[in-house]
Length: 116
Image (cartoon, rainbow, N blue to C red):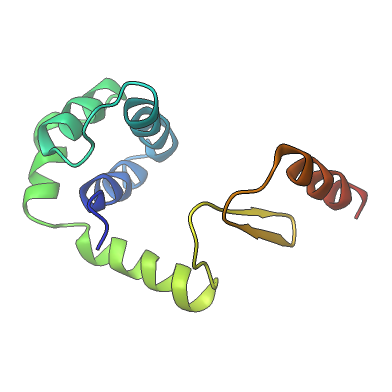
């Protein structure tokens, strides 16, 4: 299990509340730009409030594992049905790019997909 499983479970909570994209963006910014510890439930709870979610409801959902099964089902889908085996994985149109790709390769794929 990923050490960031709480962040993924928090995303499921946010998604159900109509704030999935906002939470996802805020967590990515916190992790990649601000070097915040997204394995910490207090950090995640603060981030959730910054996108307009109830801190209490969010924290309770994570502490009780209310979205653990939903997250596990999403992982199962990624591995078994979508055949995602690497991070990052990008799906552009009908093309799947697993692992790192150069910006030139990504631009080529986008151009090819736009022509279809």
